[in-house]
Image 1 (cartoon, rainbow, N blue to C red):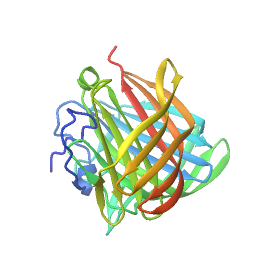
Image 2: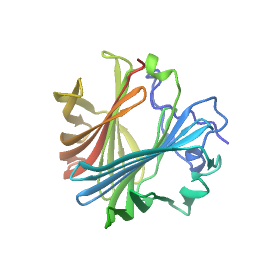
Image 3: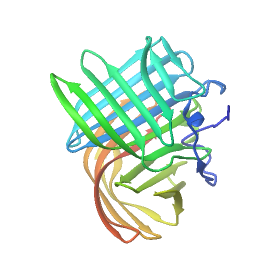
Image 4: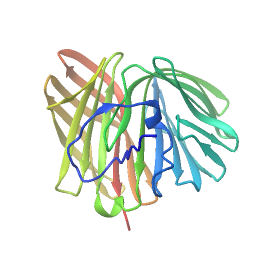
Length: 296
């Protein structure tokens, strides 16, 4: 198996991107102790869901679910399990004997994620519309079809929209040497734009922007943080501008959800993007993340 140290934040070296394989998205059980995550977004009309599987080494698995309407959380829940099985060949995870995530490849990548609890249940299906990419620090499928159903408080929500998936590895030393990151995307029918700022500290950072259609291209574009507000004791950005290399976008937060996690402060944004991508006028509602490590 290829050893892919998919660390979302390291030393801000240059990025070399290449095509991901299905094996890259499997569990990296050969690595030293680490935390590994599989993250999915689904957006359909006013509803959106984020589902994340976190493996804490080989000791425990945590399921995290946030379900939103117009960017406002209807449900936010996490649960830890100690009985799980994860494949190191393909993206496959079962918890307490029940399949939670499975991916098969047949020209495209098809993911099925499912979960059932007393609070919320769902079956969601994701299929890539653009190819996935990887670097030594990241793996992502930036544009996917997302459909299925969510059962919450006796109501069934049909999902038929767009999705996103990424997979990361975190090491326990990262909060002590890195500040955090911000990333977002603009997902359209056949193209997407992924952007990120990786922060070594308050003064040193590295930005990158990737345009995906039938392939993917790293753009010579600039990311600007335009306005800020205080949220949970931190000054956080709330609007952004991306420009250069055929891109001219303004991005504004429409809702912000703060999530407190061990060693991490995390804000999930629902955002509205407007402008031009490669000469085409666009308007899009998407999800953006802002994460700060907090070792103490």
